[in-house]
Amino acid sequence: MITGPAEVGTARAKEDATSPLSEVIRTINDRFGTDFTGEDRLLMEQVVGHLAKDESLSAQARSNSLDNFRHVFDPKATHAVLERNERNSGIVEQFIANDEIPKLWLDAMIREFHSRARGGGLTASRIDQTETAA
Image (cartoon, rainbow, N blue to C red; front, top):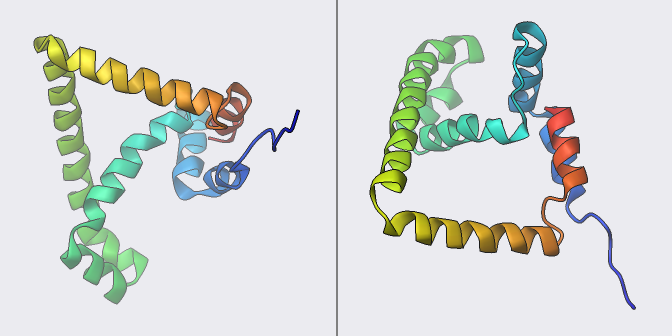
């Protein structure tokens, strides 16, 4: 029997552990007693991804210091967090309200989960490492 590496792509876990988003989760958990995990970074990543589409904001980031850029970024990011919450709530409402959406969604999620579990995606040990690092 030929076997490959037990954990493929472990570099991402190391990168995640040192990212500003992971650091803030760790700080918030320590300071406020919360239990945010690596998966909870998704909200912040979604907001950053949404903001990255704003070319004007990107141009301001390139032409200003971090401190000066904060005056423009903070209100836009706060607004984007609230919009993301509304969007996610809307998705959940559709999941509940439409009998066909859960069937499609759950089918896709089971296939994704099964594929990751069998093909070297996130294993229980890697999930634990990510959560511990976050």
